[in-house]
Amino acid sequence: MEVIIQPDKKAASSLAARIVAQLIQRKGECVLGLATGNTPLMLYKELIRLHKQGELDFERVTTFNLDEYVGLSPSHPASYTSYMWENFFKHINIPAHRVHIPDGLAPDIPAFCRQYEGAIKAAGGIDIQVLGIGTDGHIGFNEPSSSLASRTRIKTLTKQTLEDNARFFNGEENVPHHVITMGVGTIMESRKCLLMAFGKKKADVVARMVEGPITAMVPASILQMHPEAVVIIDEAAASKLERSDYYRWVYDNKPDWQKY
Ligand code: F6R
Image (cartoon, protein in one colour):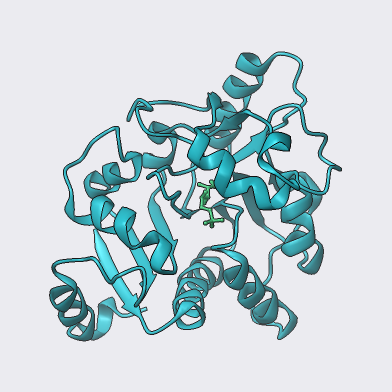
């Protein structure tokens, strides 16, 4: 796991954008796994800026989103489909048929989940999976106790996540209880995982993910087993790490060929 501590959210998001941009510029036809929530908003803004400047072409980019609420129409303002189009897709030149977001209205959810897994495989697998982390340690919506080998499926949100997401729904009572999420096993098959976390609220869970034991009680901790997991955090989210000096030292002493 590579832990990169940046002074603030803006610097961290620019670095994450550079990593994604390098992939698109190098590979052209590539597959991105995407997340929603507050964390990746500045990353998307920066990628949009690079696109508008003529530096990034999304014509041959395919995307798969991590998750979506069950029972929410894609046009609902709090759906992850609306979020993605509003905050990212409508500002870039990605062809709509290359965008994949779980269908919260799928009549047969298990069949839809199998099909989603099949589509990821058919696209050649995910090159970079962008991730945030829940205050309870979830990635995607794989809540604590999720199987670390799980695949795309339906999950029930924890009380903590309902509270955390109430802000998008005018109160906790309106947050759907079920979601479709890529599994932990699905995420682990991505060639690179890029997890960002910002703010003091994430400091505890970041420390548990990076320096705690690997446990299904903190699903993100399985990233310790990923061959290319990059964790980009701001100072506040890094504040409870015991070895932060070491992570800084490693980053400052990266050989030139390894720098982003
Ligand atoms: C969203 C997702 C979630 C969020 C996490 C953090 O697609 O998969 O795991 O990344 O809940 O949310 P924020 O970024 O709002 O703190």
